[in-house]
Length: 93
Image 1 (cartoon, one colour):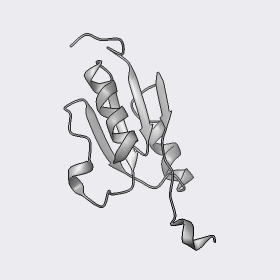
Image 2 (image 1 turned 90 degrees about the vertical axis):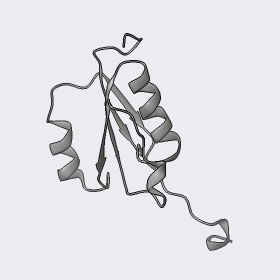
Image 3 (image 1 turned 135 degrees about the vertical axis):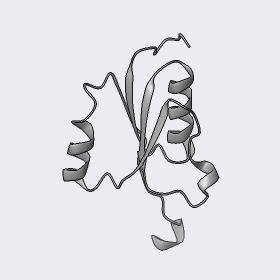
């Protein structure tokens, strides 16, 4: 498939669910080879499903492991940071 990201290598943190997973699939649909990195989602059906998306379950707070992931497979062309956490507002009121 040719597309705007054909031949590009993309890395998406928070890519195992939600907006990050949708972004990973969109980049893959546009031709990128994508590494979708994140924690296991509550529902495995949320994982991005595309032949050009490789899902890697990893916590971005593990910086040593993250560095190793970034150093494999050649240079990155695209980096999308979608990792984050949310908490119930009641915890903070």
